[in-house]
Image (cartoon, rainbow, N blue to C red; front, side, top):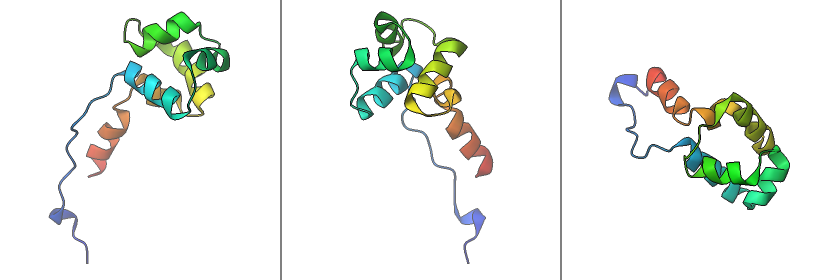
Length: 90
């Protein structure tokens, strides 16, 4: 039988920024910045600024990107949210 006391929470070894998440999702889809701009309605220059963490994402951009990538906007806006919930569950 598995005993919860035999396990410890996993440690996070890499913390991703919002920009890194946007770039990862874009590259994973094999989209160019122009593709993402067209799919999200966000200006291509702002896509570049977001990916390089030069501007904050904001709620509207997070929603637009979430729709484009088909993920919940919170996963883009708060990339470490999943790890916080996992720590509480462990």
